[in-house]
Image (cartoon, rainbow, N blue to C red; front, side, top):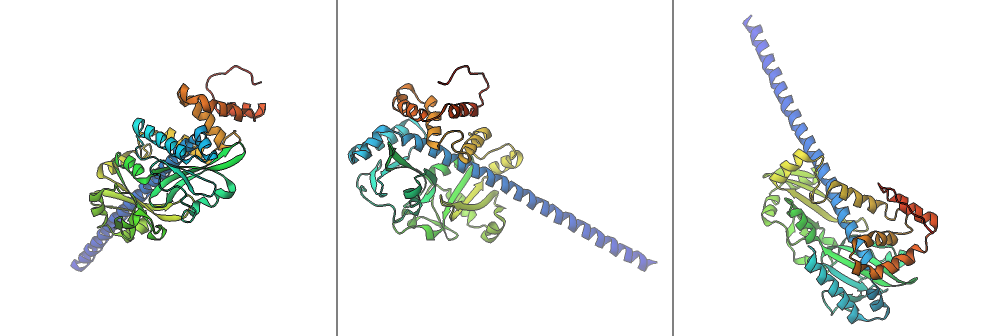
Length: 368
């Protein structure tokens, strides 16, 4: 009898042991699933913010490329005028906006530097030998925007400039990755833009930048204390899972693609403990940069995916949508350009553009 009782006790203990083990296992797996799901939301939000950054830079660049004085400096090969115009534009942005390191350059049709706002001694320098992203522009003449590597890692928008039907050069608007990282930092999110060394050119300033797990940290404003913690993570698990939670921080790793969709490195996104709790609680309605509403980001990404809508091309769309936002004195030159463009549309095409706006109030009028 005692032997039977002992057997039952052993069985009960084994069952309890298996039950507790199963509970702990499923709890661990459930926790992993929740973290993986959270990682997915963070990645999707980060992609939206990247798309917003690209779309807003492209919009600004397209409008700036219509500046008549910039076109005239290219057409007449007046490099001094080109420099003065670019410098004046960047200084106004530095004074009146949050953009403090805006770089602008004009290129001729051979992709040689015509003028830059930050220095004068690079005139005539060819870019095509290390800027493979420019080669397609020579043939398709389509505006492009994306993350590109050169001497630094930057967001670049490159816009072909037309004078009548003739292409006379290109405008490039350049923003450092550091500015993007700073936006995230203000929201409790740290960014490490990690460059694969094989995509760093010989003359790059990034060659001397600090490294992390064999990658070069391309943004100089990274958080050094967070870097010390990240260096202690199990990098193999971080790469295999795509996330890692330790030392109170939640790290997410995702590919970094250039404008040609070539993977040139990784984005390491690190959420501080406070931001992680905030995101964990509100991820369904929360976006990485809270100063942009979800609707703002959605609209920008929608415009990015369906660029021209009912317009004939993206230049017309951006130009016509920019006009109402400008001050009267800034509209003078662009209004004339807009009128010339609209004269090329048929009555039905103009009606399609109006209907696309989905106005909530009735507009009464007639298109002649």
